Image (cartoon, rainbow, N blue to C red; front, side):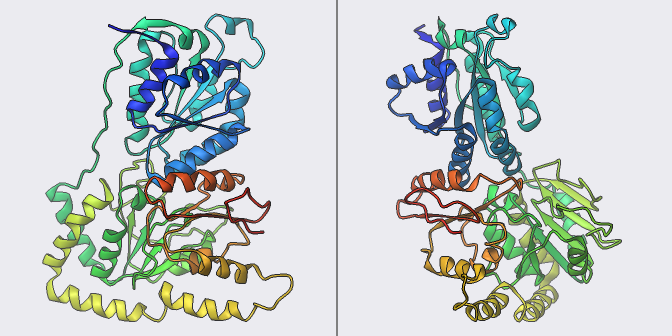
Length: 465
């Protein structure tokens, strides 16, 4: 058995798990990793000057590519700096291995400068947090971390790396990578119940969320809406491309105003939730956004979101794409000509008020403001949208200035739009910088654009005030 240092084993394990870039801001406790990088030329190190940027850059890379990412920060203050970006990554379910160098075991008892309880600090925001205490355990820990991070519901994990572990040397087996296939669909009995309940409804409505992106179900979600001839909305926190905007059934995103959402949903007699926390709000209101007595059907792999705030008549822990692939044919078979006729009638009724129709009206209104001074932010947003190439990625942290972006730019690609998931600002510029590189791995012709309400960005990123 070949002997290997902890630092070299760590990098070899990351590379074998499919990690191509290590994002970091190194300090003294991370120097062993920096020394080992020369022996791993196939792993690219990307440095940022502060840890919140490190995690946001890694987050952008993952959201644009769907890949597992890794980042390394500097002991307790560095992990503290990273927490805001980690909070955002926890909402998007970013598959991320976050590590921090730690003081040598035993030395921490002396409470040296920069020391802190790293595992306890990270635990509230990650799926799993652990400190390596034996070099022999390092392969098992990294393999488990990668498996946990990439298994739906995906999300960040944390590993504390003491200096003595990184500098130790031993003969250890690195093990093998594992990915858990969770692309499950409902049982036959559950599928039959789902079909019967949907066909019983006269006025269903669809609410789509981020699992549409995770399961690559944009086409299937649009097909379901068109099969039923029913309207479809994005969840109240539309931080991704959660529905095909140009589908004849798409109505746009729900707002986070409880009274307004309640009024929008009031005409319907069944809410079909696809991979979403559908009614996540911001400011408290005495008005409940869900109309009284509204039945809910919910499908998704994030079990925490299933019936989290409102009881569901049917809740299925299943992959959205795989479920829709069997649900749509079953609906067509059971619904027959009557369903087809109702769908055509429903789609025709939506034609004058769907996303496409509303966009045309909005563009006409916005263009009336083109000569205003100072520049009208809605007109500026329209110019940005119309100047962007079709395959561009939009990272949106404009907040008030970009309020009409989702009403102007169509979602056509699940990786084409990224916005704040947590509500905390400061994520957009670093995320867009690495989103550009992340997407290059998929399409070399892609450009990234970042919209912010505040500071302008670095070169090669188009930033707007």
